[in-house]
Length: 90
Image (cartoon, rainbow, N blue to C red):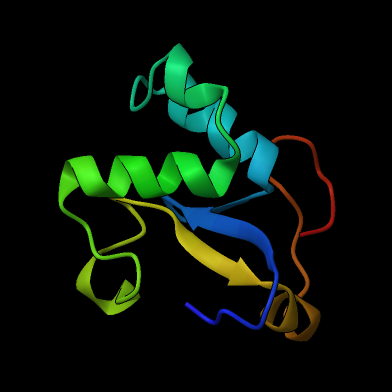
């Protein structure tokens, strides 16, 4: 991941989500429990990635159908998109 860029959203199962809705989606789908849902999104995804043995630093090593991929603010400026759930600009 680009440490110098802020995270604007995520792509998961061919849909775009803001950080808040990403947590909700994973909870709704049964991927995470209440304990992880209360964590900040990046912390929650780091813990989930550790459990699933996913290297989040190498997004080429997994598919977004399996685990959320990051949308950086600089990328979002180039290709604007909206959160599937809340319709907030990502």
